[in-house]
Image (cartoon, rainbow, N blue to C red; front, side):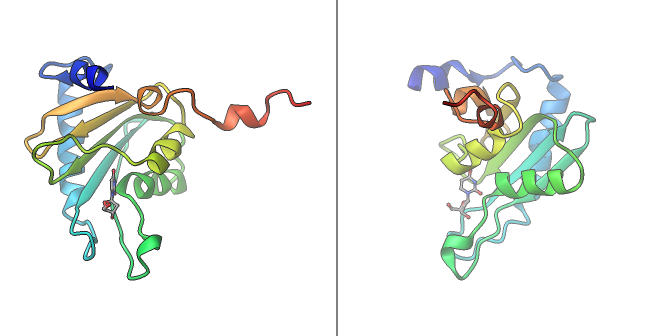
Length: 154
Ligand code: THU
């Protein structure tokens, strides 16, 4: 995994998207982070999702006094997009305040992303705008998805 992570740490652009689009998406995720409601963890996260029709949908984490009800930024963003009629995605950028690590989506969010395909791009970023590009498949290999529900059964 370390090897994959290091291999994916890019200065240039190995994305399917133009460099300018990636840069803007990351800026959008950083803007969205400013709305984070995280009085308990104080860990701000923002996300910006690029849909197939080039709409950008943003979201942030929203925590709750009943701690376990808190929602991650990625999941909120996907839910927002789907409720606005989008189901096909090109990329998502994720932003946090961590300087030393690229923000990496939790297991639940990886599964949430995977619902909408395995080949699209996820940009794990740092506040300085640097990023690691991974696919959903790389984040959640050998995954369970909607296709499995219609697979042949005994
Ligand atoms: N969080 C996210 O929103 N996305 C991530 O990728 C990791 C964690 C949130 C959940 C919680 O509000 C706070 O960060 C601390 O875990």
